[in-house]
Length: 498
Image (cartoon, rainbow, N blue to C red; front, side, top):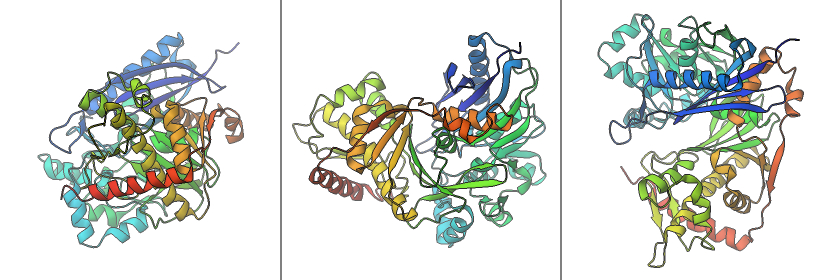
């Protein structure tokens, strides 16, 4: 009898690397996780060590497989999902990074982004890429590295350097430099990729001074990218699925039909609506992005990115010391009946969609002598739901269709109070699945489809199961008061740090 086969999902996130072993029924059989260092060279700058990203990811993969007491030969395929936009440039010959990775949260290229806008490039860039000009995306980070690392630009012009988002870096390392490739979902987040003709765009590369020779080959989300070196887990395993974390989560949530929406409550919040085979240009500062590509069929999406969501709970823990562990926030917030008139705008790294204000900064409003740490904790949690509501309103307007339900996942979605408040604030059904590991599941599904581990999307849809549903019980008057105060608070923090 043949040994049982599994899919290995590598989930390389902003603060940790994780690995999950998943079986044919979609059960997670084993998990390993390792945090790695966050590097803050100066205010607004965020970096990671690419070699630490790799070593942490390789070690948790080995640990997750070892826990199962299986061999690498029992891994049918590897799926990769990753923190998007984080930018790595390395030497093709030595495989060594020329600098730390510049993380998606990093704001060092804000001034250059402003310059591009002043020069009138915003409309053209949005038309080609579906993105707004912002320091969030990879292209301006690549330019910064070439301009600021000694000798980098000269080497790049000679074809000696490679650029990749984290997925491409992991593929390079797993294949020992044999494969330099990314998938279309990650490519669509660089400011360098034309989402209509699905090619790197030479005009945009020229505009951002990025040599085309640095760029990885772009593949679909579900095909064989290459095989690992046999030194990795003792077998040559096909790398068969890649998607950026939010697109992977959307696929893991089986938002496979037009109009379906998911929100991942992670470090930030990432809300994506499936818009089908046609890219929809946003009138409301949302991003038009590639959701995924299966075979020759591209599925597009509208996305609203919120920079600070779960990170506001980390700030309560590490910055204020109001809680010792993140899991304590719900209990603390529930010791008061309401927010006591306190509203918190967590614009620690500016505001994302639908505002795109990189100069906004965080603030707490409505504090009185009666305000306690519980009111502030509640206001912090509620800020996640308010930001989500802003994006959902923009999405419904852009898509021209009412939103029926919101599928949720990510760490903060286990907070029942937050999910109830979210349903009340939006007036729509909030659905939480049994498996919250939707990002890893999406990567696994893409990889499994490519190698025939699962036969088709119908088989995968039978795996997805609902856990809990939250309905709106908030009175209209209360909702209106909340939204009025929230909008007033957002107006006050706009453009603060200019």
